[in-house]
Image 1 (cartoon, rainbow, N blue to C red):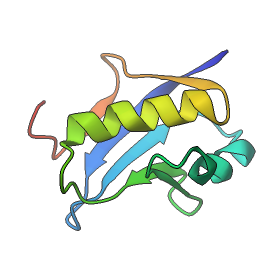
Image 2 (image 1 turned 180 degrees about the vertical axis):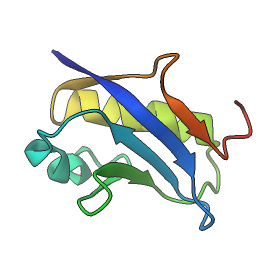
Image 3 (image 1 turned 120 degrees about the horizontal axis):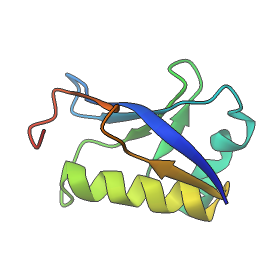
Length: 91
């Protein structure tokens, strides 16, 4: 399985969470919706977007995003100490 580092995790003013992978090869990411887990690919931002949390926390949405990306396009997203955390209350 291909491994890609996460550059940035950001909570936007809208309440959505942005998860930006460190890659230029994003062709397979647009089909993430097929996993049916909730995250979607935003082509303009080159990032995965999660809905505003209702029943799930941001941490749970992050885990769901990582699982969906591993399941559908077969990529392991890796959060590292270099990953920027912006407006993340758990940081």
